Image 1 (spheres, one colour):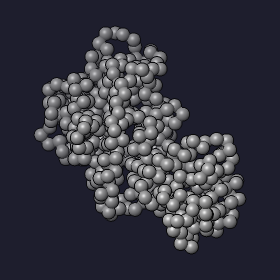
Image 2 (cartoon, helix red, strand yellow; image 1 turned 120 degrees about the horizontal axis):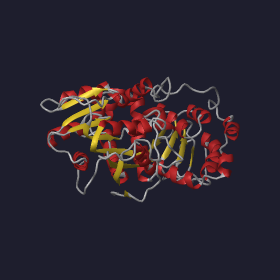
Image 3 (cartoon, helix red, strand yellow; image 1 turned 135 degrees about the vertical axis):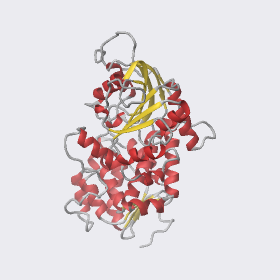
Image 4 (cartoon, helix red, strand yellow; image 1 turned 120 degrees about the vertical axis):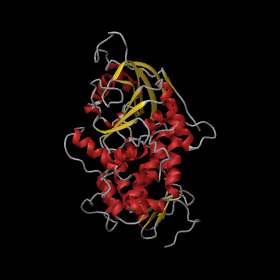
Length: 445
């Protein structure tokens, strides 16, 4: 049956008719999306973005992995697709499902009830399907050195050429800071200058970047502020990239875990500490809950007394510490986030003194949207480079990430601290404090 735009929302046909009661239970009424099924069936508002089930295998994935992970697996494999604006579709689903989160809804979409309905759909029931090849498969103890190396490699070693399809020329892979009229490149440069100014960098100072990525900060600081800059990373691809751009600059890149960076004083220009200033840009999310005090202690240990530390880090509510099932399975395994006040408390407990925090979540919405536009404009190149499945992973990642910041489910902050010069309290003696009123909010449209 061919479904036309005049088909009313209530007229469910084909396999979509079997799924209609489940959708009404999930959303607490009529769904915000149109559903189309592989057999020509349809249900839902004709003018809404369409979710297309191209195979009953998508239903089997949802049955065995209800919620975000099952949807992601079906989307990544192409068994489920979205026609129209993907961001608009996700936004409608989130808003409607959020309003409908009630006990009645939970009963309506219980796996047993879903299974009974899906008995009528050939191919929807059966053994679990193999997960997509793009999923991370890590072994060993969480946040051991070997597992952290594997997690970083999974995300960052796709290839430098792939990331160049998304990022601006500086290869800054973190939130930019926009002023009206800024391009992405200008906003990333503005962010780098903000970091350098907050750290009060001057010629001859020694800067350490913990988790330096593709070196945007250390290259900028060495070139524009005359510092001796050292970066540490676990990614061989990133190390090779920075070294290819560092000719003539006082820049050193070390392939090293943050726990193994030497704090022994060395000669000027040597890679050991202590450093005059330290930055760590969107790396603290990856060290884990249990290891965060170790990470904070390393920042304290590696900066000289009187030196400043700037941590740019993502945050979210206490009830959702990870990035979500999709992010943790496909993008950043073992990620952990917390409210910004808790992060500041952990940094203070290391012996660092809090000075300032600035919220940048609105800037991240703009940043990720710029990445997504660039990525979509080079979609064919991405598919040729990493394949259709990984390209779909990244499309979902970028759209979902922008939406999380847009809706306030995630934020990102620049946190400025310093190591005191006097004896003060010994590291670890200060209990974590709860506060948020000292955080400066900053949003852009």
